[in-house]
Image 1: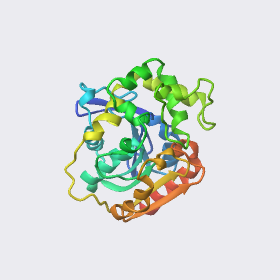
Image 2: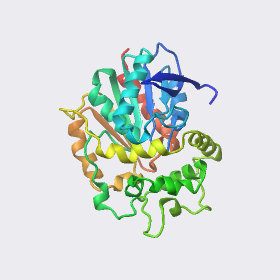
Image 3: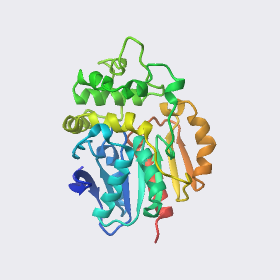
Image 4: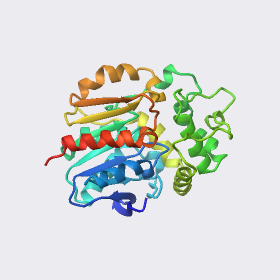
Length: 314
């Protein structure tokens, strides 16, 4: 990963870590990570995009990885991260970008393009599609052991994760989220207990990758990540009058992604999504899981580059 440069940019009183590759005068692509991901989850796409002549930027959100912690993690919201992204673009004198979001990053992308559409040339989402701000009611239709229900409870995930080191937490979540079934614990177990210590990593995720993630989360911990991803975001309101967007859009999903089994998700993807994003292209990868960008980098890179080429101004 020596081709990728690293620096810190001050935004909204915090220093955000960003990874970057490519020329400052090229079209800009900003990659927004999910959980338990970090800038590193975009390593393959950043190098491919940079070699193709684009400028690729991947921040660690506030409270994640090498970025500063917010002073009050419990009050951090998705809109704070949207504000950070806007401030980051301003600090780097970037007027317009392509946004690429994965999972939780897609939620930030969705809000950003709705609130600051004039700054966006196009969007690519993976794992989770474009979704306007709205209450999420998945928990009402799934068993009590549903991982989001558990992690929403203040202190429960912290206690669960706290029994293990950061590297093992990331290992367990990657294994769980790579499966095609929704992670649901029994009444007498916590989410971390679902994965046995002997369970191997996904074949596309190396020990070196795990060490990189573990070191970054060892630095930041999971406090802010749990708050903004699973708690504050569920109650957030945004003043958005029109939930439709008209920029070019691409949604890449793996057919074996457990998220597709969330109640109502398939109906939304096959119905309401297209009405909100009329310029949408959807691609299903038959063997893809929740981490398509890491699992199938060559296929994803080709789709990303084709989209950028088609929608970049000459």
